[in-house]
Image (cartoon, rainbow, N blue to C red; front, side, top):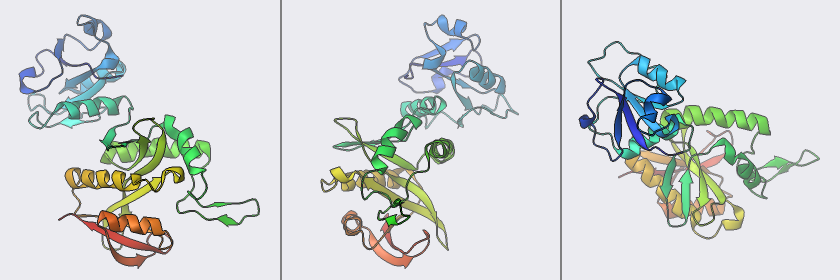
Length: 286
C-alpha cells in the first residue's frame, strides 16, 4: 500500500501553498464516491484538512489524514489526526509519505547502508525476531534445572505478552518519538539479521539517548555492526536534539567494547543504572 495522491476539500486550503511531487485533487466530500471521480481509493490517499469534521470523516472512511492548523478554522481539537501541520514551508514528500505510513500502521524505513536496511518493527516480524533471539549466546535464559545460560541481552516475553508489548512500543515509542529499537535486514536477501536503535536511559542527572545493537551470531565478524551503528549515529546527529549518545556493555563482551571504541565512543564509568554492573561509554556530537 503506497501513497498515490493528496486530497483536500474545496475551499479549505489552497493546494498552491504546498510544494509536492504528489498529485493533489479536490473532493466535494470525504467518501469513496468522491474519490472515484479521480479514480482513487481511500487506502491510497492522504487527506489534509483543517477541521475536526474532516478528520472524523477520514477516520470513518479508513483514510490517512493529517490536520492543518489553519487560522481560518479556529477552535479545532484535531483529535484523530496523527500529525498536525503548522505550516507547509518545511513539508516535503518524505514527510507526507511518513504520515501516510503511520496512519496505516506501516513501519518506517530509517536508513540503508551498503549491505543492510534498518526499519521499524511490525508485528509480522515477531516470528523472525523470536528465531533470532533463540540463537545460542544472544540472550540469557534458564535451563531445565533453573541454571542461567549466559547471554548479553534479556529474552523476549512469552508470545502473547511480547505481541502486546511490541504493539504498545510501536504506538508509544515509534509513534510519539519517531525512533526506538529497530530491525536490521540483509539488503540482498531480506533476512532479519539483527536489531539496533536508540532508546532513552535515565541516568542520575538526566535522561539520555542509549545505543543498542545485536547482530545474528552467524553474521558477526563481517563489520555489519559497525556499518549499522554508524548509520544510526548519523541519524541521531541529524534528526535528534541530543548532545551525545550512551552505550552500556558488559566488560566481558570484548567484541562490544571493541566496536564502541571503533565507532569513537570513550569509556566514562562503571554503572548499575541498567540493574547490573556495566561499563558506560559516550559518543559526543562535536
